Length: 562
Image (cartoon, rainbow, N blue to C red):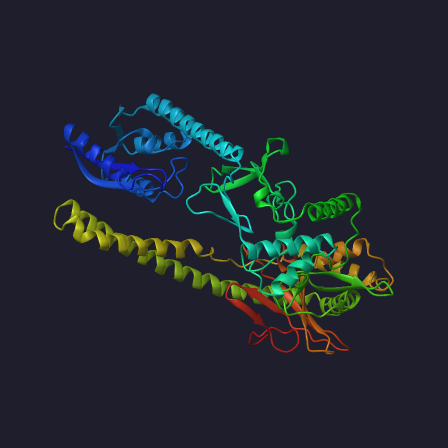
């Protein structure tokens, strides 16, 4: 008798849990009629056939097929394997390569022609089902009911599909937001106030400006939600599945495809307030699309808050026109404790003067590379040892799991006795494999390219030449920005106590200077540490996956004998 495996699947949690049991019973009866010995059963419950992602049972089936544990796969129908033409053809191709047949109870042995026809029919049925679902949802809208989705200020009425009721506590917050916005307050200020009062947001931990502003193209966001004026709008977006990841993504639909119906019983915001808020938002959107962007500052996009890691942005300009900055998280959500407002020019002067003085010595780069490679070699040895240990552990676990499976197949022990242990071993193997997958490739030493030292010196000299004119320069500083950004990755501002100034940490692009792509998955940069005031101290830093190493006094590395 040929050995066979049975595969069963049902699509959604709304279907009968016994669906797979019925399929398995049907396949067992088929196997008995055709003298096939069922040696394994695989199943996926509440899993769509539109993708192979997330279907553990199917993945286990394919793994067992590669181990030649059976020569036939039995299914009730081919659409149980997949309702996607590409996936079904791929499954058939891989099983055929292993010399394994697919036999469907209702269709017989699958060949290329049957696979092509059933794959096409299965996909058409799936797409037709999706269209019918959308047609049904459109009918829900025509009936004046909600087609689904959580809306802040409302909750579903139990036992009444598509019907909503107003949550008064949340409705009061909605009215407050619209009134404040229509009164001229910014979304950032409103979010800040709500976070300070610990008002729970629609999702996540904090209110943000984007929660209130939303996205006009998608019709998303609190200010743009027409449900608050008693109008249900549906079909703003459509869901598509990424064929490479199996994840469902939303795509905006054209406005002429949106469908809406009046639902006055759901109104929360007065029409006059709604119109005033939207007139203000339209005015702001109009200005944003026509006003020319101001040329970037020297440190635009490079500044980071030392307290929370968020970016720092322009706060205002004083009476003399000087720009002052603060943490953007304070502006957006009020979630950062760093309330200090700093003059941008002070930071720029400190960064430029400090870098010019400290970076003029070209031997600094050789020092960085020498220490950098030493750390990479240490990490490489550690990574190889860890990988070898995990691979040995994985092989040992898999060996024990296979021995238990063989004992079940040979009737030495019962399937019931071995089931729990096999499941534990599988879970342990998957955990080890995830640790292996998370390991980075062992780093290799990098070489200092001969031309990079000259390029480095030229870049520093270019900064020194235009330094004299920097104080009087305007926002658009020409080559200064390009030369500066060739060296700097980020500037972190660390606030000190009241009237004690601040410290800045400049992280440079070491990978660019040495001509290699060091640690491509993360930033591994050298850095300078400078303190605002009459004096500053400098310490080179070396980033690595295990933490940050800081050299001792001065610029000499902590390597003995150097």
